[in-house]
Length: 304
Image 1 (cartoon, rainbow, N blue to C red):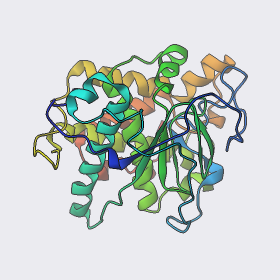
Image 2 (image 1 turned 90 degrees about the vertical axis):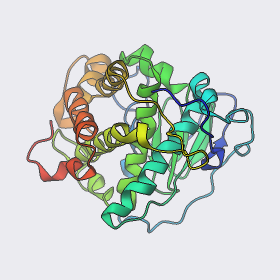
Image 3 (image 1 turned 180 degrees about the vertical axis):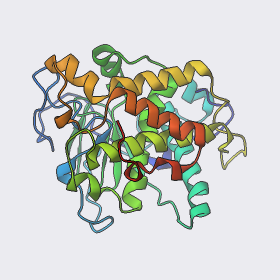
């Protein structure tokens, strides 16, 4: 997706953390499916099941080890939509701004209020209340400090190792998916993943596919979401090519694709995120309907 060049970026919605180096850390998840990238994927596009609260909002936010605020070098030059079109870190800021503006205006239609959720952008490693964040772990939402963690360098791994197409919408889909998890947390749904953490029709898979659908809902409305500072939409109308990029990213993180590439066989009983086809289908469900009520993955018999 392409930002309108004159919209203003609000860097107060992000923090910046970590910095430099790929040091060791106590990852909140263990090694998983073979030695290819070790701890990648189990949390990638998702949440850490071991860190989920038993009920939403019961935990106090934890302190995060950051290396500065939004004025540091990662986002210091992120001021306008033109910057977001040129720089991946600024694009993450713009995506955060757009997604939060959308849910802030959309949820009151359902009698709920959106609670602003920070994203921590970092280069290398940083600490979350759910453990060490790094591009080997991938983007994730941590319910214990109610923040999203993204190292934009991760997108190269997504393309190089798992066959995703590049493109801005493929990247912003990641941001929107993680904000889907933040919304689930605010609605008290995340615990359903913990109660049923594995299998093709498990609660964990249904939570992930719901977040894909919620990302699609935002995409369907994104070109109408206005920048509060200018009143101009953050984003230009989406193109078919951009949708194909997003679907490529969704397919790349399907459990069947990941398992085939990393262990050479597909074992649905171990799925935590859903098949490639299901991830694409639920994203399109949200995109085509534009209705979060159509994202209830717990209301259908089968999601894959």
